[in-house]
Image (tube, rainbow over all chains, first blue to last red; front, top):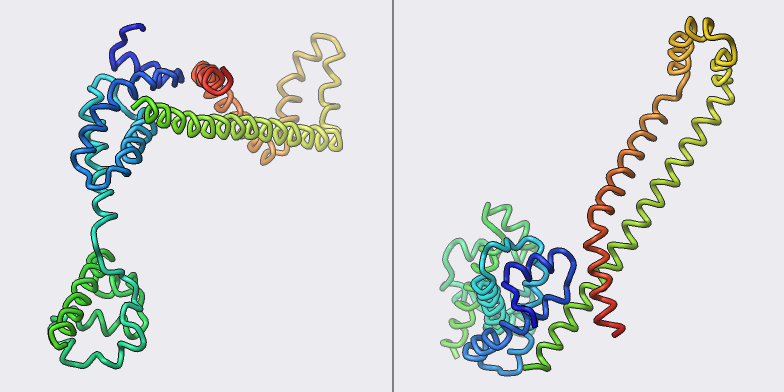
Length: 166
Length: 125
């Protein structure tokens, strides 16, 4: 096997000789696999994540500067993939507006909303009036994700208030 | 680990095959479409000029050199004035686009050829 540097391999791949990508895969799979394996709780997902890392790198190889080393770039992708993985597994309350089901609605009393601050109350009022998150974000001049976070926090507060009451 | 490596490469090749096929088909279709449209517009222009009998302006070319020399610029100017300019502009635009597409295709031809060879080696050997 010819001893090629990472720079030459990237150059060749950029030139369409994609069979050289197998050199990169063979060279870094074990390292990346071990790294991800140590971070994950579910071992079944390691394969998928390693695959995603190499696919992401392949998709980005056209823009990749061959003068730079591959390894740090690959590990940057690993970090991003891990972040996305943990985010998808993070327990969160659904942001669906119907979180308070019809039958529970009657049980909610004004005291449950007392734990909310003025801004949260106003946002909940808008939601109950049928405004979408986008419209509320425009009204409050805030990013949509901020509105979603406020709603999530508010729901948690209501949930806690209901739980403490029981 | 070998199994995982093969799985990764398989996926990469599948992505690249789709991408390359899509790229080749879209580029060739675009080139054919532009070439056909240019040809159509060119035929329309010729048809218009024929109807206007604008080509008669060049009949003087069969005469003596003296007459040609005296009338050439005059007749050429008249002929240009009779050209359907909007269609000419469209034709020029299409031809420039065609040239640019052919240039990029020829520039990338080596890359595409290498890709096809790699894909062929992977899937068919």
